[in-house]
Image (cartoon, rainbow, N blue to C red; front, top):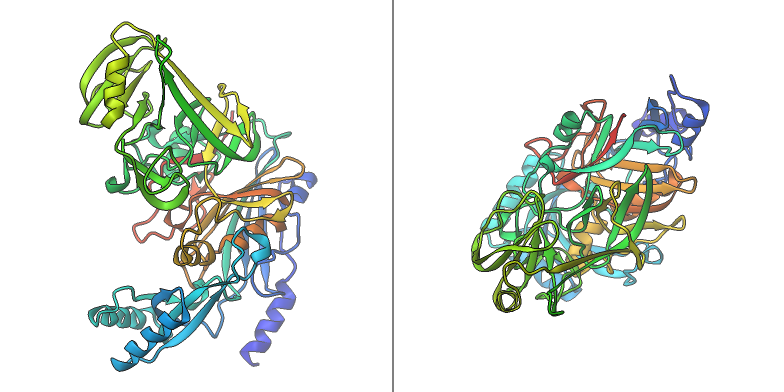
Length: 522
């Protein structure tokens, strides 16, 4: 039998989901499987689902969809170009050096579903088609030696602007807040801003039933303090990291969830009534990961994976940061929990009290702080968190996890890529939003049920990953009406019953991250 006929037979046998519901209540099984099959990829792909109950009101579903295509290949992307003229010039340069080249036109396939309305995104110049990744890697190295420094080996199915058969490995946790008797919460890695920890480790030390990685964070010291959430973080009612502009975030309280545009505003007021903006919380002064801050260079708008700068800031530190503030020139004041100034310092790098905080200032903000406060005076700090424009009371029990962008709104795919900083260049939009990567994302169904999802990626034989649009399709297929993206790539990790159920894409194994979403049994 020809392979194409085998595939046809396989599709007809497996197109209906296989759902194992041992130990599941009927209602739980129904909640866990809203649509028979997902929408991603080509139509009529084989799909299987295995569902089991983790606790009352909590299910875990393992979904496998699609198959490895006969037409897949490895190739080398030489460069991404904005215009055809630049792409044609590059092709001629390649030909002069003996390389064959082809042009891939990158289109915005779903402009009606995103705030990026341009139909044409750019061009990718490629060379070679190989069955083995090593051959493509060798060619990429050769191209770099010949002066084409951006050359890199890629797998054909990772290009999310083209239709694919997959395969995909998807893990889904669904929580029914009306039935679940435990606690849905978040946790900082090692309970500190300055710590990084795997989701497996977080789940182990908290004895969590399950866990998922959370929001974006600083990776390298050149961009700030490694482990610092790059966006809002509220832990049990305490604001520990400021927002990136008004990005989408996940709010958790009493096992209920909301997905909203979230922002922060911070201010200090002296006894004499003088006021100043507090630029951030628990981060390195002068470095704002993904931008979206106050009067920063080069922009005060969200710009993902870019570090903006500001040499004149006031940063607040509390015990979540660590033992001491970052060292450097500036001025600091030590506050007790009532806001009374206990001590002042003529340079940065001092102890942070267990209760209370430190205000650390640089540049002209250091001069302002030094000239307006004195020991034993009292200052007032206002920390305002808003969700969809309305102020949120930061009370114990409230957790907020940053992410972005929005994927679903009112049941419709509505990806806010440009507004939330993922389309600041055509190149970045193509490689981050349209390309297939491992992803983690969250959704809320109309009945209030919460979905936590990972999709494996960068693994051609098992799972190729998804783009923003396909992430939204998965959420929609599973019944979500609101949805958002979380940190992905090598950060994507899900733990269920002390077992890592997905295969993280980093070659070193599971990546230490800044925070995790945890499901705890009481």
